[in-house]
Length: 460
View 1 (cartoon, rainbow, N blue to C red):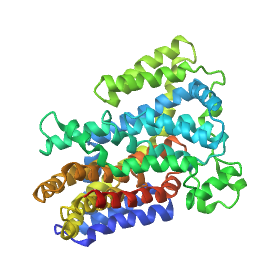
View 2 (tube, helix red, strand yellow):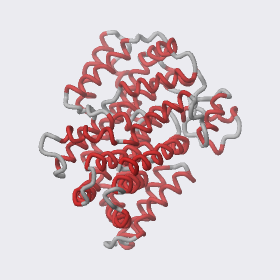
View 3 (cartoon, rainbow, N blue to C red):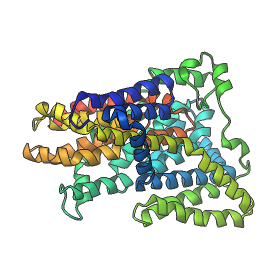
View 4 (cartoon, rainbow, N blue to C red):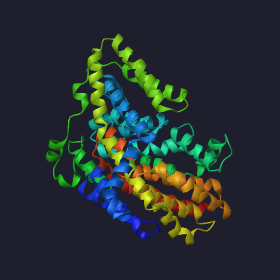
């Protein structure tokens, strides 16, 4: 299928319906991919699927994802097993005096770890589980707070992997001069309305100004009845707190050293942040350097034999496989959407409404829908910027405002899509069912998106 038609909307619709209905995101993505390939060429579905899968598995980004997520899992497993994370939890409990303060501490920790949304989602979620559990906050609420301080915070701070990536794209596409990518990026930060509103929204939810509503309200009610630790449980299939508790799983903290020392948590985390900055916001190099020091650091203390450390790290890598599988399936699905020219079709369909005044708002809506449908926040920006920015220049639209709209859309997709990398890792780090996390946080994300849309209309 080479022409632009509305059929390109079918695969994303299939994925979203199946993901919500069956609560099996990988299965939904595979079915959506096959539906898309049927539309492309019914006679070559299997061969095309094989070619795209191999291409994705050979992609540098996927290789990076495997290494980074697997190493994160290994490091987190060590932090837990040595009792370092447990010690941090005990410290946090001294400051957390109730449900609101436990969530507020989660928010603050998320703001502090601003370098990368992967680092943020996995570290904050796994660290704060026990604190929020004590005050009967649902894992869905924890995952929402974590997700709201992952991509939104990283977008707003120019010293992050998001800023480095998007700044580079602005230079590559001629929007910014060589060496001025971050400077142009910073000019757009005041206009990144969705990230600002998402961060404000989570603070209003934490303080209770915006109460829990919709699916989140049900999750909170169940947690308040005494069962906060939910993973791989479908909320709609749970009727009582006893059933909820029966389906809850034990976390790795059950096997942790009860006498763990606080420095065994802080030293690796500080090393990771420091090395990541030192290596030019390269989190993979930061992880390698951190593990290279952390293992001898633990060995000198005789916390466990080296062979046990290796076993623990392997278990940590295994724990990340569902997240890695979901994101990999999303990359395959995104490639099929590209074959169907989904982005071009949406932009073409909306072009009659693109005036200089409405361009930022229309761009935000269109790109937000695409990022949500495909789960590809960075990919959608890379595909759309060569189309949108020349259009903005020809219309004499406000360039920083349009860039802010594009980045707002990417941030929304990263947070709201059920199978985006950030959402998957926020759920993984918080030990929460992925679809339950997506369903419970979606109303809040949509509310912030609606406000952002009207904000772009007013600013233009």
